[in-house]
Image 1 (cartoon, one colour):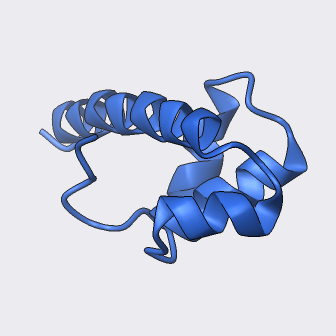
Image 2 (tube, one colour):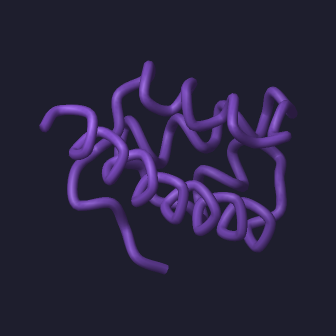
Length: 78
């Protein structure tokens, strides 16, 4: 899985989550820990009581969304 070139902020993650149907509190917390705080996915999944594979799928989805958000930001700043 490709990782973002830079860590997301909490606000960026919140905006990206609004474009998804990810609402589970444990999943949102785990995504925050990995994408904002830079923690490793496997121990984070275990800590939050979710399956590693599911967390990795959600991470891959959000990393893909991040590309679109970054592209939009570039276009908006022209």
